Image (cartoon, rainbow, N blue to C red; front, side, top):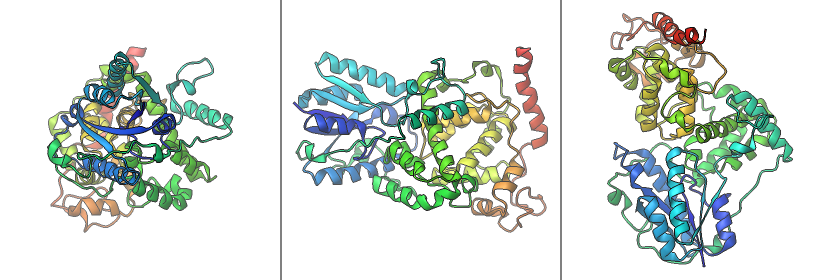
Length: 462
């Protein structure tokens, strides 16, 4: 009997826990399902994320074809499709890597029950994170709710292993040999799914991911500082490849631990942040519907549709915010520093519910990841697992002056301000920039309103 390896957000053929295990056991077939429940929620039929996934699958298909095999592509509900295919192939085990999102966990539970009823085993492996929820615990055996102590324990656990980084090799010679008339390259899957090819600035696939990782290696030494400046190529641009599993988390840890610079430490810290947010989502799924700190659900945000629309369209009158949002809308990408700036601006300056911003990012970000997106928005809104209090409010003017000092990023995305000098561009005088929208709110006044808004929690605690 053979095995089936179901790939999802792990689109690669190297260092792949589930695939490695399947290939070791017996002849293996790889399958990918276009989940109609997920695709049905995508409003934009030119969604660049689907093209990124297609590119990744095509790269994988080229490799497995060279071994006489193919990737089975299905469209429908995985709860129906995976057990059906497993039965048709007569496999003994279905392998996949664990996913920590609520929908995925529920889906996988249902798939497992269906398979069990058919006498087929369902085996899930740890792959998308370096440490799972019960591998990094407090000294009392509890789950960490604040990042810094979690990070310290993560590093302690890593060092306790002798800094061993597993490598799940994949012998593709053990793939099942067959020809596939509905492979990702032989069949019009765009037409079948009702979507249109929409390439982005970042093409999908492991080859592109590994090249970016290699190109980033000499830049890592400066990462701690350079990563804060959106006009500087100081980041790896790997987030979308990480999201879709074109690289493994172990690839990232290897890259971050072969150097001893502050930049490398910061890079490793970002990897740990990712593990942390996946753990929080896994252990506290209520964060997808409200605040991690449940008492913060009592805050009523007065900002409405006009404020949200100005933010979403990049028409707030705050140059750094507008530049960031226009970049997102056009490319599906946003620099991490700017994500913090625009998130803080929406919920703490425009006083709009952070969940609306979280949802907008989920629709637009090429690298959208539920755990990271939710964690980042809750961090910005001070509703999440963070030791910092609610009065941390980013000043859009000072953030702009500090992290885009020459106004290079602003000029690229807000051409109405391109003629202004480096001093004028951060807080433009309406007389100097008549073609640019005036500020929709006054920052200083709304900062005070925000503090009053959140103060209800302080009064309740007293």
